[in-house]
Amino acid sequence: LPCVLAKIYGFYRIGFRNPQTGKSMKMDVFVMENLFYERKISRIFDLKGSMRNRHVQATGKQNEVLLDENLLECNEFFILLLNINLGSGIVIYESPLFIREHSKIVLQTSVFNDTLFLSKWHVMDYSLLVGIDEENHTLVVGIVDYIRTFTWDKKLESWVKETGFLGGGGNQPTIVSPRQYKSRFREAMSRYFLMVTLTFFL
Image 1 (cartoon, rainbow, N blue to C red):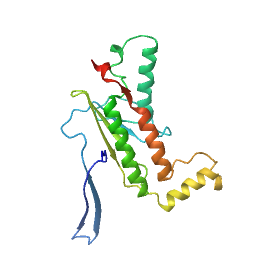
Image 2: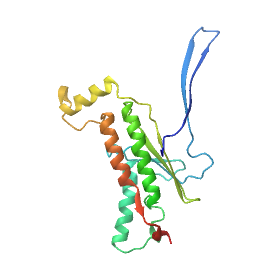
Image 3: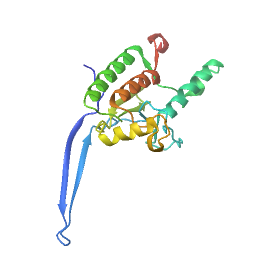
Image 4: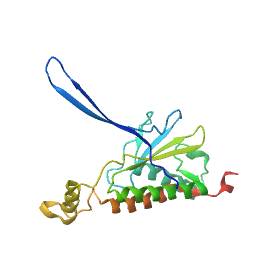
């Protein structure tokens, strides 16, 4: 089955003791695959499928990580230019994420499989990390940060915000259940990547 989960290489605990003070310290280290190894990535997006606090001010700096709302701004800007017939040559920097039909099917299938797996293990708050390799005209994608489980404190926070109890305000919770997160994530990833037929590239 197709999968876009970034590989986990190991989980380590590093400990040391200061012989002078006698104090000990431990550090847990989580090692994951570097999706962008030996690639020239021009833009990076961290996508969660949410529109709440998912925008940063773009600076154009190298390795700058943009978020969901930044991506939608690119897509909307491109569509606006098409509607007023300004042509595609003007939107090199503001281009959306176009993928071929086959790539879209593989990506959607991978996201479906991976989110189903993560939801069954009560995992949420993961992201789809996307890198644009303009040199090879490819997108590099992988689901990362999939270690956050829906613990009792997250359940309580979600319930308080949703019900308005203790002044929660009755707003949509920022923390949602793994099942809700899965559905929102799938829908958003399907919408973010615009599909074009092969004839578009010919």
